[in-house]
Each structure stands twice: as C-alpha cells, then as structure tokens.
Length: 289
DNA sequence: GAAGCGTGGAC
DNA sequence: TGTCCAAGCTT
Image (cartoon, rainbow, N blue to C red; front, side, top):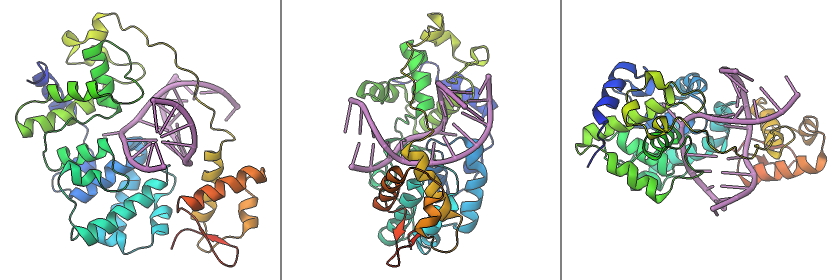
C-alpha cells in the first residue's frame, strides 16, 4: 500500500525543492549527518553558515575526533543546545574507532550513536542510503495530521499509530519511497507550515481532511514558559563566556554574567555534569579538553 | 511521559 | 520587550 497522492507530492517536490548544500550530489554521509544534527530544533537559515564552517574545519569524523570536544562546543557557536556538539564529537570518535571512519548505514546502527534518535536515524538511513523507513519529523507529522487526520497539529510525541500510518503511505519502491519522504518534509516546511499554511499552493488539497473540515483551529495550548530568567538562559550565558575565551576563565568572570548566585551555581553544576564545562584544579573553568 | 535543554527570527 | 516556533534527544 502507498499514498494515493504520492505522485502529486513528488511532482510538487520536483518543482519546489530548495537547493540546500546537504542535498547536493556527492555530499558525504558524514556531512548529511552533521546537517541533520544541526537542524534539530534550529532553522535552516541559521544552520547554513554553521554547516559550511564546520565541514570546512572538520570534513571527516576522524578529523573531528582528533580535536578536543571543547573545540566542537566552541565551533558550535550560538546554534543552541550545545550538547549536540558534544554528542556529535562522541559519535565522530565511535565512527572513527569502531567503523573505520565510515558512517554505518542501517537505521539500527545509527540509532545506537549518541545524539541520534528515531528521526535522525531514519533520515540518514533514507536520505543517504535509500532505506525505506518512515521519517517522522515535525513537518511530516503536521502534514499527516492535517491531510489524514483532519487536525491542525499533531500530538506532543509521535504515536505508534502515527508510525503505522507513515509506513503505510510509503511507496513500494525504495528509491521512490526515499524521495517521497524528503518531499513530504519539504511540503511541510514550505507550504503546510505551522502558522499561515499556504493551502492555495498545496498539491494535495483534494485529499486534505483538515481543509475539507474548514481548517478547524486546534484547542489553545498552555502558554510556554518564558525564557527570560531560566536556568537555560543562565547556562547559555555561562557557556558563552567560555566559548569566547581562549584561556580558562575565573569564577569571577562567570559571576559577572548572572546575578543570582544560587541559580548560577546550579547552572554551572549542570554544565559540568553534562560534560560541557571542565572545572580545573586551580579553580578556573574551561571547555572540555 | 513529561521535563529539561539554546537561540534568534517572524509576528 | 510578548509569544510562537524551528529536520529532536535524553533521562
């Protein structure tokens, strides 16, 4: 079984696909993984320059593994969620030692690597190696919620039913299925967007349950916690001090960027526990060596 | 399963 | 100087 509107989505993709660097022919599996990790919760526009700079510095997993994890955190810059940089470095080390420098090709092998979860494992297995798996990211989930379920937004986490649905829609042919997966994702990113979807440009309006129902609005969700004053903001400030310093920094330098001493200590402890910050014997702090 | 984890752009 | 959201993962 496969999607009755697969041809329409594939045709739309042929016309509208963005010319992104990680989609260029000849891009290495490792480079695609780097792009996928960077794209976790970070918009394409901000990833583009970071992706180019990262691969210019470390073209292969072996090159990254040969450098200190702290350098990965520094190069990560302000992309956000810097644990991703640390885990990418760990993965580079594993790939270098265990897989002789070549990214493994199956979803299960990829899933076992740090920082690679269900989505990223499927995405790399499909986009690079042509596997036939459901690729459920936020874009695909939103498209399926609307077209198939008639709801404006999907639930908080992908359900087993969602996976079954996504798998049932995959075209039989592996290569076609891979193209379908990236095409649905692109449709969600460009047309079936979270805010102000462009239904007038959509190739599958005839099949869309949400549109047929008159685009009913989802129930209002509880307001998100403000970022201002959170531990996350505090961690970000502290790590920025370390990123911007070539030398280890003193406690006083960290104290200067956050007024609340209790919260500051908690955030710093968290960064140390996460391996993002090294406390040195002399009392100073540094990115991990 | 919920909560924690950064950052900046679009409204 | 508010809210939402962006190719999620881990515990």
